[in-house]
Image (cartoon, rainbow, N blue to C red; front, top):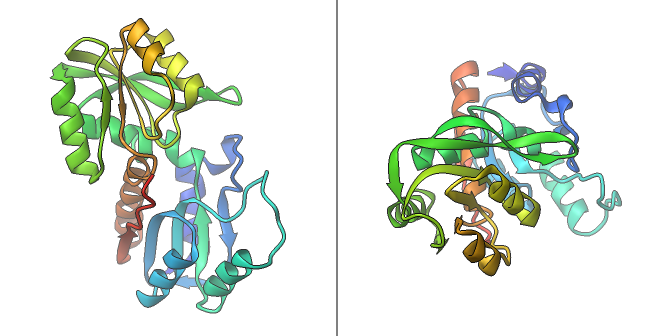
Length: 252
C-alpha cells in the first residue's frame, strides 16, 4: 500500500512532468482513493481500460494518452461522462504522461525502442516546441535491416513495414514512437542516420528512396507500449506494489 500523493510526486519528479510543453494535461487527471494497493498501466485512457482496471481492483491507472488535452473539448457529456463515471464510481485515479514519457532517457518509449533495437543512445533527436523529445543511437555492430524489422515485429507483437532504401547493414538509427510525422522524418534525414524507426506510417516513400534512408514503421500503438511497461516495473519496484500492463491494441 502506498499513498497516491507519494506515487504522483514520484512520477512528476522522475518524468519531469512540468518541464515540457505538451498538448496533454500531464500528471494526475482524475483523483480517486488516497491509498493505492494496485496500479495498472496502459497506452490509452478509455472505458475498456477503466473497466479492466476495476476488475483487477486497481486504485490507479497510468496511461500515455490521457483523457484531457489542451486542444480538446472540455464538456463532460456522452462518452466522456461514461469514462469519468467508470473511474469515479470505482474510486480509481488516472495519471497521464504523454511527451514526458516519450522523452525519458531510460524509461521512455523512445529510449526503450532503442534498447529493444540493440542500439545505444548517442544524442538527442527531434524537437517539439523547441525541446527535444527523442534520441538517436548507434549499434555496437552493424545490424541487418531486415533482421531488425523481424525482431521488432516479434517483440512488439506487431507488423513492421520496411522501406529498404539505405544501407543493408545499418550503423545508426533515429527513433520516434507513435506518430513520427514528416517533420521528424526530415530531422532523421538531417541527422544522417542509416534508419528511421517510428510508429505511424507517413507518405515518405519517394523521399526516403531518393535520400537513401531506411525507414521502419512499427505501429503507433505497439511502439508506445514500452514506456508504460518500463514505468510499471519502476513503480512496482519503488513502492513494492503489484502492477499490471493492460494491452488493449488499437490496430494502429
